Length: 57
Image 1 (cartoon, rainbow, N blue to C red):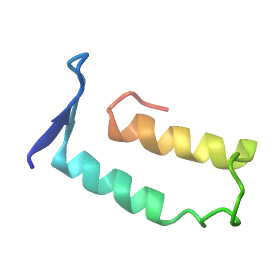
Image 2: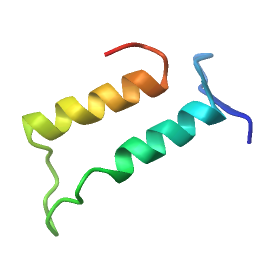
Image 3: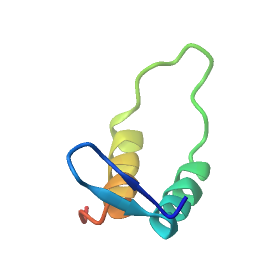
């Protein structure tokens, strides 16, 4: 797959998907049953997603 495109027309290239996967792989998984992110985890994940979509952080 060369890119992802949302219904709204936003596009993420394969290179950015690979970067996002690598960034997310560095996060430790939450404890079993934990369903909420800490503020720190949320900020880090938001930055990785924004960067992958080319939105800046």
